[in-house]
Amino acid sequence: KQEVTQIPAALSVPEGENLVLNCSFTDSAIYNLQWFRQDPGKGLTSLLLIQSSQREQTSGRLNASLDKSSGRSTLYIAASQPGDSATYLCAVSLVTGGFKTIFGAGTRLFVKA
Amino acid sequence: ETGVTQSPTHLIKTRGQQVTLRCSSQSGHNTVSWYQQALGQGPQFIFQYYREEENGRGNFPPRFSGLQFPNYSSELNVNALELDDSALYLCASSLDRGMDGYTFGSGTRLTVV
Image (tube, rainbow over all chains, first blue to last red; front, top):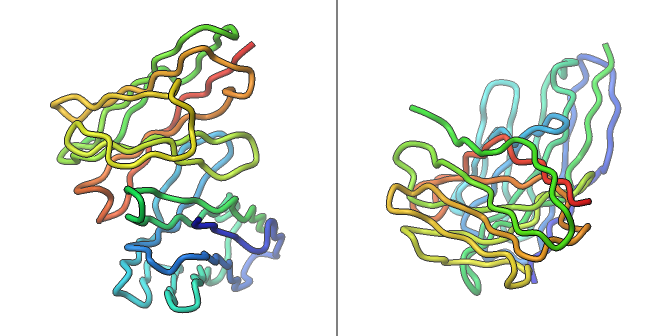
């Protein structure tokens, strides 16, 4: 059974700091991994998608890496800003036993001005 | 290009009742998936439809059912509502079973009293 774990559960940093959010998954037979941002009470906004054949993706201040063999992904946020405050979720999609997308519980980030 | 829209945004139902939630997919997308998100947790996968057929299901009882229509819009039906069904219900659409990642709607907040 695929399980997705995100560490840390919560993080508070001063503005300008670079930070790393971690995501681990138990079954390496994924076909992609996606990072999302969620503001309180809102839907999910896609940040980065990494296909199983890729090692990393970048968008602006965000960089996500994927190591399938070790079951890990990291989201790197450079020069954090108060507007980055949100919950960050990672999700893996797999085809074992039918298509499924499994989410972690998220990392709640607070960036202090 | 329109995004994913969900209706209604909020809903209050009584235990034992039935509810139907609706989702319009992003233009060009033929896959829709549904998630339940309890407060403080990551989204839990309910099921996915690809070209009007269910092609993946999470660990939810049969009283959670769905439909996808020829225009790729979708419905989530929940029968015999229980208090624990209170949650944010999220719909996501994608092209070809999620191969290019998912686009989420803003969700429907369901409260069961």
